Length: 446
Image 1: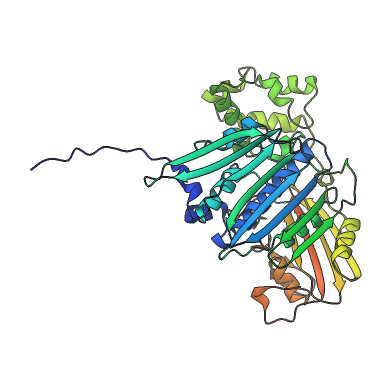
Image 2 (image 1 turned 90 degrees about the vertical axis):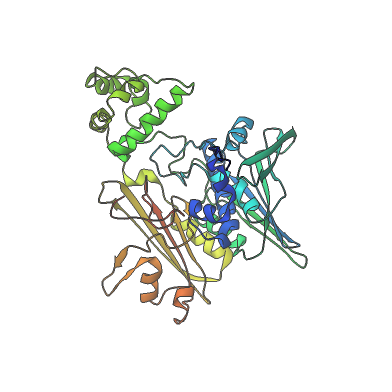
């Protein structure tokens, strides 16, 4: 009897970005919210790009429903994604992110958002290409997964004249729970320096809305180009950042001198402070020196924190009463607006700003929630007990429900919806999430 000499095959894990079940695990949301994932990530990226370039963001969203397909396009007036970043984005053997290793109050640090945006339409059955236009180049991206699970990417580049960045996707509409206008309104609620335009088209109707900025730049909030504070790190998270630099150097990047690395942090840009930190670690001249002594990163962090002051919660920024009032009045007939803002620290010592706005209306409005100026898929405090003078409840929705001030919720259908609209916003560096969808916060361990 012939013996089978088995071949050991290697298979790429890139296929998980093109499989609906595995994408659900990666993004933390069910498949019927995949279109919302794409829209949220694209707007987050657009706002970050404009902020980093210190440009007042102008974000356009177009959604066309045609023959069972959602044609989604998001554009911005930022500097445009460089072509080399688009090419790296299509390398599914690596994660490409300028935020994942840093601890700061930015909108997201998933490290694979653009990869999932390319994969989601394919996973839902679309075979139309994704199109990215930026910096004079039109990128047409068509993925294909062969029967063995290997991912193949067809990527062509031709000249284009679009300013900023524009990303277009075709997503099968079947079973998608997708309300793009609500997402645009949610972003407008928490980003007062940005202008948003929305155009929704179907065979029978057209909806167009615009939400103009209520503040001009510079707007006081943390932006991705600002230094991070050493007080926002733990020894483990600073280790992750240091070793990310070490890996980058091993792959052809610079091996940063320790003093240069220290000066990248808020409160440590002065040479005298950096020298004081480095003097306590004489054996370490470059970041690569920590490769043989990773525990010494904890000593580095202690010295950095000792030579700098922790930022106050006000440095994180906030939306403010005036903008919430203007936002509510742009959508609803408003009788009165109540607003409160509280600042403090989490058990870990990280600063926290919480702001809450409630508009009294003639009819039920909506509940808008956000973390670090980015709307969430659900209640960010769902796992947190909130206590008031008369009652306590789990999460924002539960607390509002107990107070008979919940606008609308599927889980509270037996209550009469309150004639209010509510906006709740949390700003904190390095939030720890309880779910992969980056919605529910761990308020005790953050």
